[in-house]
Structures are given as structure tokens and as C-alpha cells.
Length: 113
Length: 113
Image (tube, each protein chain N blue to C red):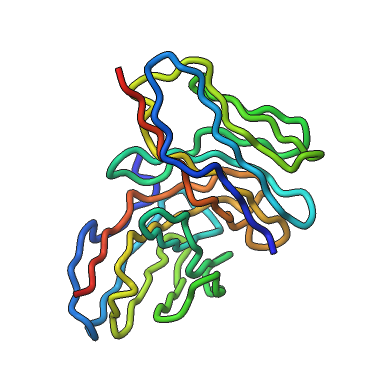
């Protein structure tokens, strides 16, 4: 009963380094999302995907890239990490039907120093 | 644009007290409305939802009614428990393509014994 799985759970990066946050879901969901959560703030959408091969920008896409080569996987790439990218990152997925529940992973805590 | 405004926290209550967390929204069209809960160190979990006007979502003693006339979706619980201590997020789901969620900033609830 895995659901949405994110790795790593914790990571410290140096300024200018790059890394990929992995996300996989086993529910055969069409839609996948990446959100970031800053302290005292709600979640902001970074990128989303409505199916394999299709991605689109959310509210705060700068400094990130995504790909969706399979239904299951939706990795988020951080290029040239900056302190402003210190945040908690959540991957999520859902079926296409409006009103359907969006399921979240447990989060990835990223610190850029 | 579409947005969610939540009651500012933090909220501190004694066990068995009545809880209300206010949530209002601005949206074009007819969004679905959600309450998500985040326990310390965990991801977000769906608490309840409503997909059309006058619908009432309920779960674990929590309730919220979709009020189109006041564009509100206030969360209530008659008698809170220590285990309800968490951050609560109100969210709306946009229709028509991405089904992405727009979140409020969250309200931290602490329930004391």
C-alpha cells in the first residue's frame, strides 16, 4: 500500500549544486504535482503533469525542471541550488476526475547552505 | 485570481472545546473545496471535501459546508482532542484541465489536555 513515495526525505545542498527529488506513485494516477511549503505558508505549486510526456508550470517554477516519461514517475530537478529553495517539497497525484482526492507523499526536507 | 483565505493561527484550545477555523475563497466557476490536515513531520492527508454548493463534508467528527452565497467552507468540530493538534489547510480545486489545488496558508491548532 505504497501510494506516493518521495526520496530523499532529508537533504542538505551547497549553493550551486544540483539534485533530483524522486517521486513515484503506484495508483495509476494521471495527474502528478510538485508543491513546496515554506514556513508559515501554504503550499505553492511548482510544476504539474496531466499524463506521461506532458508537463506544465505552476505558480513558482523558476529554478526547477521536471519530466514525466512514465505514468508512475515524476522527478523534480533543482539546478544551481539557491538558499531561497530551502523548503519542504511534496509530490502528489490524483485521477483526472474533478473532485477526486489528491494524495500526497510524506515530503522531502531540503536545506541549501 | 483564484485564492483561499484562512483564519490566521495559531489556535490553542482545551480538550473538549468547540473548534471553528474560517475559510473563504475566491474563484471563477465552481471549484471543489477541501480540508487537508498535516500532523507534525508528515505529509498532508485529506480530512474532508465538498464538490458542490450546500454539500457537507464530514470525517472524524469534523464538518464543513460548502456555502456558495458566502464563498465559505468553515471547518468545525464539536469537541476537540489532543490528537487533533495539527496544521489544517483549506484548499480549492480548479476545474478544467489540471485539477490542481490552491491552498490557504494553514492554521496551526494545539489542543491542551
